[in-house]
Structure formats: C-alpha cells, structure tokens
Image 1 (cartoon, rainbow, N blue to C red):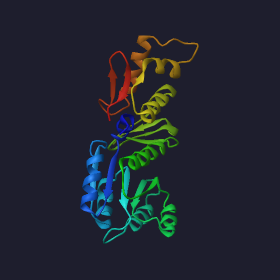
Image 2: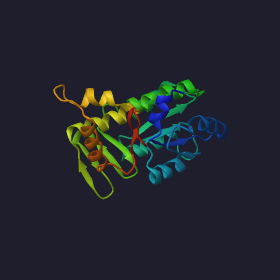
Image 3: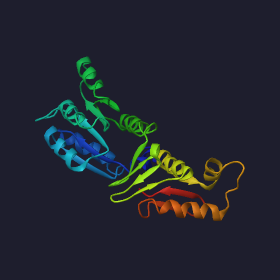
Image 4: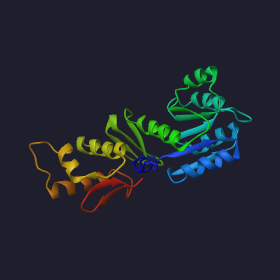
Length: 227
C-alpha cells in the first residue's frame, strides 16, 4: 500500500459493514494500520447505530446484508448527512444496483472480490474528494474551515492569518512533511526573506490556534501534522 496514502488516512475514522465474517476479517487486516479507528458492523442496523454513535469520516459497506441492506443504510444516513463519504462493495454488477448506488453520490463502487489494488484506488478517491473541500477534521471536536480561515475547538475558535490558512491547508491536503523550502517559496512573498526568527514566530502563533502537540517539527526538514 502507498505510504503517502496510509499517512493521509491515519487522521480519519472508518465504519466497515460486512456480514460475511471471512471477508470482514480479511479486509480489516488490510485496513487496520491505516485508519485512526475502525468500527466493524455485521449488518445494516448495527452499522447505523455505530454511525450515530461514532460519526465516522468514511463508510465502507456491502450491499447485501441482513436487517438493512447497504443501500438502505446509506439512503437513511443521506437523509441527515449528504456529505459523508461512502464506498460500496458488492458482488452485483447488475445495472439496477449500479444506478441505485449512483444516486447516493458514492466515492467508489467496488465489485467483489475485493483486492488490495481495488481498495487502494477507492481510498485514493476518498482522499482526492477532499481537494475541493474547505472543512477538515483535525481532532475530535476540532475542525478547520479553510473558506473562513477558521479553526474551531470545543470551546474556542481562532481566525487564521493568510499564511496560517495556506500552511494548514498544505499540511492537510499533502499529508506529509512540508519542508522549510516549500514554506519559504509558497508562503513568503518574493520580495521578503523568511528568516529563522520570522518562521519561529509564525509557528509559535499558529500553535496557539491549534490542538496541543498537533504541529510537529521535523528537525532540519520542516513540519507535519501529528494526527
């Protein structure tokens, strides 16, 4: 699995619904080290209860499940949450299933058997779906809204400067270390020089607006988010 993809996925939580125990176990073993948390469900009703309780960032669900199908599950969730990302898995290639699923605005539709290659493509599509978004989860109860240049915590909110807003978006979208050279070339104007003192003050002020210890310095290289 792509290391950069894994690094990007680690800040997200996943709800995985699959009624076939063997398939669920195999896919869980592939996904286990990628996500911050994974919640497993064996039928649609259990998946819906977990969704309400855990509020995952991504749902991967099979279509054919007892008590509530995957399509029924997603339709029910879509009644109150049109934005949550969903990947559907199914043994069906029937056109009716595909058309029904298309109306649910899915990230991907994976036809079984599920392979690591198919999962990788689907998970990359999940990450890419955030490219045009403006709202990101930093930690539980912490969000970053790029369009408003706003970081909001459980009890407080902070307005970001233009540089802070750009830098935080870079860290989240790229999902890797942002080097000192990138910081200087992208954030600092061509007419100004990024001195060590200027960078130190910039980082100090930004840290005051973020969850504790989320911004990590990689000595001699740059900065990344500790998600």
